Length: 168
Length: 103
Length: 352
Image 1: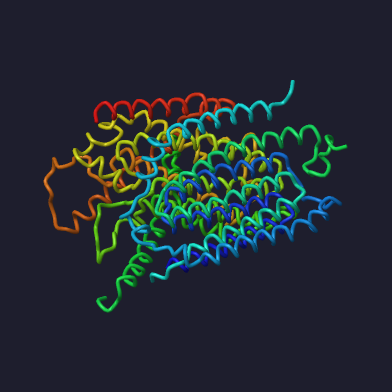
Image 2: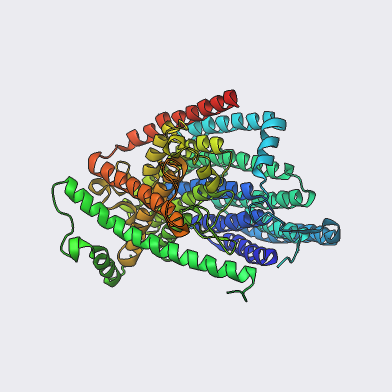
């Protein structure tokens, strides 16, 4: 069951990411990223992080990506054209990304035995609930970082308003 | 029914997504798409955090992901505001044409 | 059925539940349209549809056949794939959220809960998440049809839905604080002690949250008085200007299915869900079947009352202006929702 979930949504995530790379129009790239995020949300759920799965859907795909789509619609951005700069990026980009991928997956796969596997346990039923655990940690031990992030968001709101306002 | 999935597979999936994000970041010329590929990289890292938090049976990794999401939201708000401001001034979203600061 | 394994029983019963709930929801959507036309007609001193069948009861069927048989137009300059996928996203999102709604008391048949399609421990967050995905349907439909009115309508709808989502989410925090769970069954159980007196809206002192939720939800579903995205006098028909035939019908159905979802959630969170308003005042009567069906009837009655409220509001209130809509959401509803959270948590901390 878990393997099936992983295979289906892992393949979906990779397909979405590759589509992001290949599409020329920004709105198509944004929508492929939404597909990636939704499949990642399912994977989070299968890893026992159901609160994060919901937060991923609500915050990432429901708010941040909607904002992206909204801005793309607002600016009416067309398809991108290729320039001389992008050719250099092609030459440097693909080998670099491939090298990083090879390095990372070599490390992960060689340590495969040590890291063990996932067990579904009571996660997909109702017995285990990690929301209480998360909130206890977040609102007791990590209260200061939590408050600091809320200040950060306030600053970001003000910054966004100032930056996007039309100058008189 | 209870076929286990090695944690390493989740990490490799994260690595694949991260590399695609890097490639998209380098190749794409549209500033919004570049921003989108940054979000893809953040998501890939989040997946590894959740996988590790599952591996160690601790929720700290999940809380880190939570903070990453919050920061990503703030980043998206400011970044998109900057993009709108740039578009107003230059009428283009191509990063190769936004090069006033270059010699 | 004894030769089936546990998993097979679960699968079969789940498919059965999904099919029944889907059919009932789609029928309810069709008849909500009729109800709206009838009630609105009476409010405006006319009959409403009355020719098709007895009392016009076959009108939804006739409308459906008409929409099926119409020509499916596709604008030449439209973005084809997005244009086609947008109504599908809208309808799918509005139908999926019904699946986490428990519409009856807990009733296990062979270990499967029969009166809820899926009983998730984060049911409330799932509903919020699916609602926020539904924005894409509207945003993409306006953008992909390559029409200025549609684009303006979808820009309006998107910004309105993003803005009111905050107030909507925050208004529910008080209820979650009281129930100490995000599971919809737990939230219902937390209000079941003394009938109507322990419902969140009365005994839980969440009536402020309830009104915030109601207003924000009206804006989320793009219904009157917040129906600016489809303001006929300004924007032709808003985001679905270029849609026809089945694709238009899908948007139409999505709107009414969203109404039903909002009514279900309001019932569950503030009005005790399937619990009877009399609590234990009336003695239990009838057999096990009556006791199983009675909560479902209560639930349907409450949802119906909310749908009637929707129609009543549409028949009564004029449309907001756009700047009024935005300042109402950001400067009134959002601070009020935050205040409600603070007061609720203070009271709970002092009591507990």
